[in-house]
Length: 254
Ligand code: SAH
Image 1 (cartoon, rainbow, N blue to C red):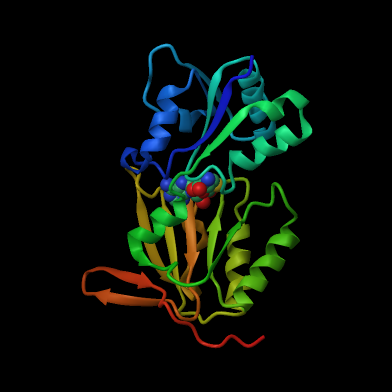
Image 2 (cartoon, helix red, strand yellow; image 1 turned 180 degrees about the horizontal axis):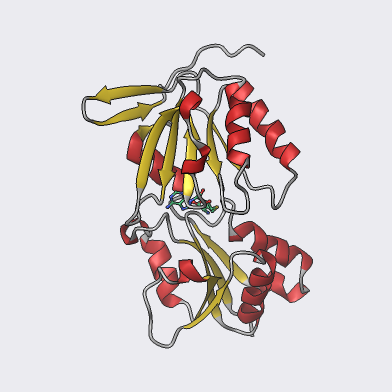
């Protein structure tokens, strides 16, 4: 008997940012699999089984979910934001590719979610209004040299740069190095947005010029947006400024 597997994005935190499609998939599931704090965001439904796990071991978690689905269960794997962005969807397809042949017959659905960068951008204005580039700063799954090479290339090409996984207690120095790499290509006045826990009770948004951006203000629930040379602030007296990137761009030298 083969069941189903939905890989569901919960959005950045606030219940009103969970899409109706995601809410439906969560309500329909017989089993919920995921990192415990994400599972805690999902409303309880009678008869549903929960399988909390820690934040690592994505592949093991995906295999567990696939096993449950292969035995006929209707499984939902939950992730924060969008499941396809630095999250469980890729891990699940990797598990399918390398796993039991019968897993390929499981009906798998990816249910998109509002990614942290979209919620963060909306909070401050429109910093992603023109070309942008998205990187995870985590060097758990790739060499730090690769992160730096990609950062340098994105900064040289004048993309707005979005950084996920900017910092954690285990990775305290990477963001400072990233800011220094970007600053080799960007003016010190370039706006940097620190968006902490967007849409959650302890949300905190900080906007600082690149030259003064303090990496210690980021933690594992912070998303960073570094402006391009065109990104601008619209000041509004005592209110926080709008941050936006115009719809047009200047010639970037090759
Ligand atoms: N799939 C998720 C990203 C997972 S990677 C998404 O699409 O949003 C985890 C990183 O996402 C965190 O380290 C942080 O950089 C960012 N993040 C997730 N939720 C966030 C939130 N509510 N506010 C700010 N950043 C968040």
